[in-house]
Image (cartoon, rainbow, N blue to C red):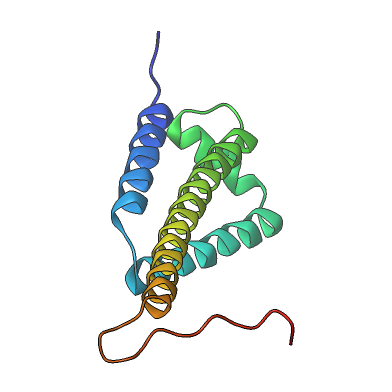
Length: 127
């Protein structure tokens, strides 16, 4: 089994992206995601204007075709998008759970009589 430079590079990038996305939250990580999106758009424009550049990059890193390099880049981008989306949904679920618990506790506390206030009379079902 002959490990090529691109394989080592891709493994390192995938692990770095995954580690970074699991650790980061807040404004700084949002800025990094936006920067990543701008870089991705720049690479797309370069790919459209100069398609042979990818063949030269592929030769440098030890891949046979430029399309393979682009595919590997898209795999890394998809991985980072997937991890980011998972973390965002997990945070939202945590917030919704806390909110639902807070509302339930507030409503339960409002239904119990307090020592200062007399108990509420039952509502008349006829009216």
